Each structure stands twice: as structure tokens, then as C-alpha cells.
Amino acid sequence: MPSSHTSPDLSGVSQQKVEALLERERLSFFARNPKSRKQADRAALHLLFGVPLHWMNDWETPFALQVATAQGAYLTDLDGHTLVDFCLGDSGAMFGHSPQVVAQALTQQTQRGYTTMLASEDAVVVAELLSQCFGLPMWQFAMTATDANRFVLRWIRAATHRKVLLVFNGCYHGTVEDVFVDLIDGKPVQRDSLLGQVHDLNQTTRVVEFNDLPALEAALAFGDVACVLAEPVMTNIGMVLPQPGFWEQAQVLIRRHGAMLVMDETHTISSGPGGYCQAHGLTADAVVVGKPLGGGMPCAAYGFSAELARRVVMSKQTAPPGHSGIGTTLTANLLAMAAMRATLSQLMTPATYAPMLALACALSDGLRAAIAQHNLPWCVTQVGARTEFQFCPHPPVNGTQAGQAMVPNLQNAIHLYLLNRGVLITPFHNMMLICPDTTEEDVTRLLQAFNDALSELAG
Image (tube, rainbow, N blue to C red; front, side, top):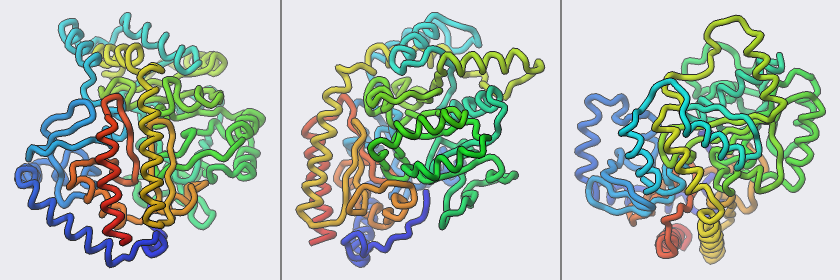
């Protein structure tokens, strides 16, 4: 994540109070979680950085919290604390942990095989359901949204015979290395945190600010952009909503200059069964969706318009024989297909989303009320079942503004305060997600803890 350029004083909270609260909550976490600490010490002997993936250390906790069980909207840690989970695997468990319909589908499939590298009935049904949800006729699969984005870029570059990718400043599309170019003082700079990068991304990646139509048109005018890869709403640098009319005009510009539009709906699937694009009448040439698609199982999918699919097929048919650089052995394995079929047919439905969206609105209203009560210059944004508070008075309109609104110590203090009171929200930024199992009581618990934190910080 980008570093903060904002003093905590601009957030309406003094640095002294933030540091004092953070230190107290760290000590409380140590006292509350002796079993987690013991297991974290054990993990350090054989797990690099002491965790399965190094960024699991980026949580606010002094050591890695160890999970025992996860069910519905709740986690139980190794020390027996039950946590209301508003992180939900950063959307991976958007339909709750271990949803029953997915668990049943997986149990049945385990008796019929795990992986074969062959087609199955579930694959056909899943493709049909995806087409109905997202309005695109042709589909392929991946293990993660990162892979799906990477494969889509390769397909489109082959189909268009263009090399350049255009992204928005502060974007996130998994670990696709092509996207890690930022605007620093208006100039494109390859992100320093990208490890092991051996070629200059500025040669094939162009970056502009979100919501900036003149900059978008100028970047497209060279006529060499294969595609614009974007989230309909930026979600990983803090939430950045499109300004009214932005996407309608951007679609026209992108097509005028012969580029493709790829929408990464992995997080914005919180908007409804067909994602943000279907909810708002936007049309993309390709769509990527991952994380929640299999109810928590590792799987993803990407869809193409009929015209793009035709060009993609032609690029493969006219290419020399050999490995395309697209696909992995376990892609579309039988377990993943069974999970996606259950999720698409029984969870990704309007009936499931309706109470999630209503409860997310109540959460957003409650956060705004608490912020107003304490007279803090913060704002709240929402995309469907996904809600976020940000340390700025008005919703940011681009990645630079969103990055400047980040105050790491303040964020860490609030997150750890909530965690020590049984409420988990997403690390890295201030996102909260509602799942079908989240209750009004759970939201009330979050809002009470949040209000108590603000009372200490701003009182």
C-alpha cells in the first residue's frame, strides 16, 4: 500500500492520542491471546516471516492472530474469542464462511473426483450462469483473479496486436506486475515495493488518474493501448467512486481509440449478482471476477464479448503450436467447478443480496452518525455490501487523493481497538463487508465499538 502523505492532525485526531491508544491496545492484545502468540512463535521456525504469506504480517496485531474455525459471519481464534467478521477474507468469504450449499457441493464432489484436466457438466452450467449474470457470452477460468487478469491481458494483447496497458493510479488487480506503476507528482513511476522486477514497466504500462477524462483521452490518443484494465470503483487504496457520467464517457473514448475495456469486478461484485457494471448499465469487452465466486474456494473466471472472443480464438488458431502462457494444471478442477455452480445458482441471487445491501446502508448511516457526533472530518463511501470510512472530509476522486487520506497509525489504532472488542475489519484500509449471515446485532456491536474508539480519540 502507498505510504501516507497526510499528518494525523489533518484527520482531526492528535498523534499523541493515537500513539497512546495504539500502545494500550497492543498490550491488551498480548494479554488476550497467549495461545496465538505461542503458535506464532512455533510458526516462525518454519514459515518464512512466520506466516503462510508474508503480507499476513500487515495486520495491526503485534503477532499473527491464529484462527481456529470460521463459520457464517464469525471467526473463532485459538484463544477462544468469537469475532464478528466484517473482513470476510477481503471478499473471499462475501457469502459467509463455509456456506452450507457450497460445503454440500464439495462433499458430494469429493466422492466423484478432484481434478482431471477434462471438461465436466458443472463447467457448462457455470459458464451458462456466468453469461446470465454478467451479460457476456464466452468464458474461461483461472485459480485466482490475479491469474484471470494476467490471462486476459495476454489474450487481448494477442488479439489486438497492441502492447500497452492503461490503468488508473492506485489501482490493484492482484499481483499482476504490469499494473504496479504509480503517478508521483504527475509522473509515472514503477512501484519500488515490487520485488524482483527485471524490466521497465513504463515501456508497456500507461497510468492516469481515475475520473480524469482528458488524461484518459490523451493516454489513448497514441493508438497503441490494448486495453484499459479497471475496477468500476477503486477499492484497494480506499474507495474511489466514479464521478457522475465518468464511465459513460470513458466507454466512448476507449472504443473510439480501438482499445478494449476490462472490468475487474472481484471486489465490486458486492454491488449485486452481475457486479457493478450490470447494476449501473455499463458494458465491458471483458470482465474478471474472483474471490467470492466459489464461496471461498480458490477459483476465478473471465468473460469476453462475442467480438472479442472471436478475435481471441483467431489469435490462438493462427499462433504457432506450443504453450500459450495461459492456464494452470489445476484451473477449472472439479472441486472449483462444483463450488462455483453452487455459489452462482444459490448464493449470487437478488434474494441473497437484498438484505446484505440494506444492512450495509444501515452500517454506512451509523458510521456517518458516529463521525458527525465527534465532529471529525471523515467521510463514508459504499458500494453495495461494501462500506469504507476514510480520513478526509469528502470522498476522494482519484488514487492520489485516496492515498493522501491514509493515516496508518490512526487506522491501526482503530482496527486493533475493534479487534480487542470482538470485531474484525479489513486490514490495509478501512473496509467492512456484510454477508448473508451478518445480523443487525453484529452491526450494532461494530458501531458501538467504533463510537467508543472515536470517544477516546476525539474526546
